[in-house]
Image 1: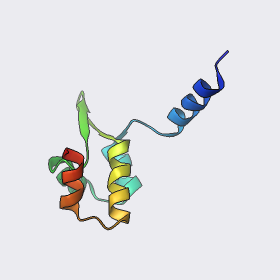
Image 2: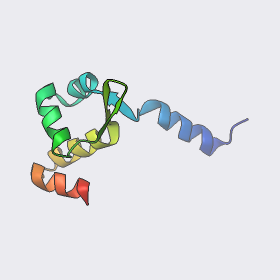
Image 3: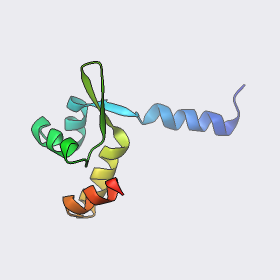
Image 4: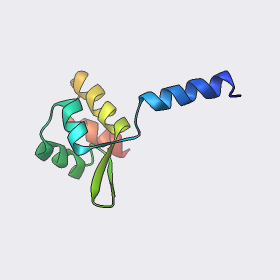
Length: 83
């Protein structure tokens, strides 16, 4: 039997993915793939390739959304991610 803290940690993990595809990321944040790839190249959004598929970290998408909602210029958001 799992402890309560372990169960809640697993529940949180089940609700928030670690990686999403480019298509899913575009649907989530409302950008076109071209702009998303520009953000990846600039280091604003973290990604990795598994086989031939590009996967983006959900955490970096959330960070992008947080910075955008706070009206932080993209250059400043990029600098924060690289620090």
